[in-house]
Structure formats: C-alpha cells, structure tokens
Image (cartoon, rainbow, N blue to C red; front, side, top):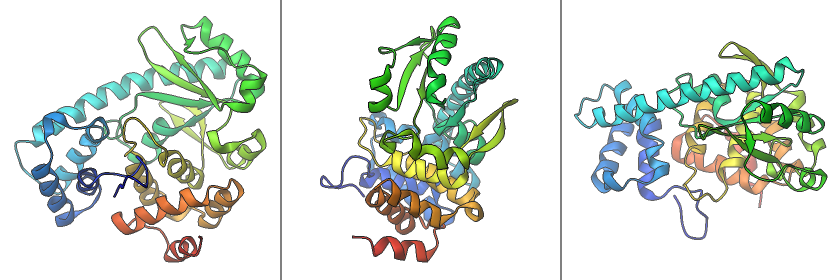
Amino acid sequence: MRTDQEGYFWPTREQELLLKAALLKGEAAITAWKSWAAVVDFDRLDAGSQRLLPLLYKNLTDQNVRHPVLDVYKGFYRMNWYKNRLLCHRITQVLRLLNDHGIDALLLKGAALVSLYYKDWALRPMNDFDLLVEQDRIPKAIGLLRQNGWRPSESLPDEADFQTRHACTLTDDSGIEFDLHWRILHESGCQEMDDAFKQSAMRIDFCGVPVSVLSHTDQLFHVLIHGVRWNAIAPLRWVPDAIMISREAESHIDWRRLLQEARHRRLVVSLKKSLTHLYREFAAPIPGNVIEAMDRIK
C-alpha cells in the first residue's frame, strides 16, 4: 500500500482492494470487490483504476458473481477489446513494413504481454505500443515510418540522444503513438547491457506476423522495473502484468538470472520492493528462497 514516503507507483488502499478483486480467486476476490465498491466514488474513479475494470469484470464473472453493476464493467471490457484490436492492426502494419525492409524488431510491453499471458485483447488496456530496433537501424526505420504516415513527436534522435535517451515517440494521423526504442530500459545505460535480453529473446506469431519478444524471465524483470516508477497516472498495471507472467510462465522463469540482472544493472532495491509486494499481498508464485534472498538485501 502506498505511503507518501514510498512514491506514487504503490497502490492506495482503494486501489489495493481493486487489484485484489481483479486478481485473487474465490471469496477473497469477492470480499475485496465489495469492500472496494463500498468506499469508491465510481463517477470519479481515477484513470489507473479504470484500466483495471476489464480485468475486474472477467475475474468476477469467472467467480460466478451476478450483479447489475457488472454490465457497466462489461462496457469497459468491450470498449477495450475494440480499441486494442485497432491498435493491433497498426502494430502489424508497422511490423510488416520493417520486416519487408530487413529491419528486425522486438515487441515490448503491452502488446507482447497480451499475446503471451493475458490471451484476451480486452483485459490489458494499451494507449500505445513499443518496438525495439538496433541503434544503427534507427535512422532507416524512422525514414520508412515517415514515408508511411508516422511523424516524430520530438526532434529526431542524434548521436547524443542515443547516449542519453532510450526511445523516441512517433504518431500517425489518427493520433496513435508508438515508442521506437534503441534501448530496452531507460536504466540500461548502454547498448551492451541489453545484449543478454536480446540473446534470450523468443520468436512468436503476433497476429500473423513473426516478431521477437523478451524471454519470460526478462518480461517479468522489465515489468517490475518499469512499473516502479512515478507516473502521472498511477501505473497499477505492473501488478497484474507481473501476476499474469508469473502464473502463465511460472516454470520458465529463471529466478537466479532475474537477481543477477538486478545486481548487474544496480536495480536490486526496486526489484526487492516489487517482488516482496507481489508475494505478500497477492500470493504471487514466487519461490520462498527468492524472497529470502531479497530480504537479506539491505
């Protein structure tokens, strides 16, 4: 639960109840939902919480809950499915464009998470999408994208930007945005720090287009580190993202490598906070020895 000292990536009390209602099973989920519904003003629901309503709808219907308010949640579920399918169409267009010109891309964040773990286009809201391209291919990629209706939302990256930034944003005429990365994390520091991520990447079929994605271990690491940052809209999605990965790919996560990456990138404190929170508040399937190792870190 959030306190003023811990920062804005932690849920408030109300948001914690909503997360539990959307993620836990059985009576625990129903009790959390009833407690949340009793204390929130739905007409003034914050944007971060609104993003969880499709997942809440799915979880409550899975628990055989019957209540008129579920029709309201269902509206968010259906709207999100529609918006995400439109976004999926634009993603595949960009991937095909890059593939046709010999530029390999790695699909990051929401679109990869939906395809691999949520497996339902309604459950994980996305405002944009993210692709990583090798740094030396960025100028060609941007040139192709500009010829096909995408325009940079900021100045084009130069050599200095490649050292100080990790991505640039492009927008099309309909207002869809995507971040074109040359580094996976802002915290990466240099290209070499991403090499292990790239070497462990997997190939998947994304809506009929082959593309690379991070390994299950690196997906979890990326979500945990990216999630525990301050954001104007409370980034609650890191909690369900991490839970979905840990549930769907539990046997494929290399916990030793996860800890090694955190030490290598000097992100152990962030990883400790996020993993401990998931384990204690949401019973995430994290091995006890990993939590013990985290607890020993000061």
